[in-house]
Image (cartoon, rainbow, N blue to C red; front, side, top):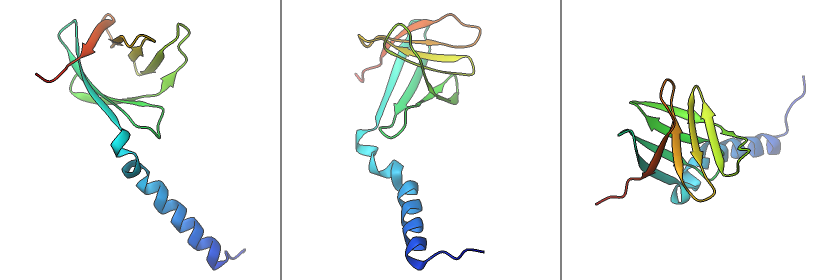
Length: 110
């Protein structure tokens, strides 16, 4: 059995600690937005600078959407029948299971 040197153990523990704190480092640049859609639904989406996924709260649940290839340009996130599209011009649309794709807009506070 190979023994780890004390210096290596400390480096490993320090790296593990930093990985655990990663969310705290980028909170000032996290983007969280609420959108209202043409079909009357609303959703909240969060983007974190250290993660390529979109974190969405929609229809009373949460879903993490990995970024997918968008052949038409812009950005596309999709999983489990939920697709979020963001065009190059900033237009947002969402597609959910058994529902047509619907256009959405930023829900600005009044």
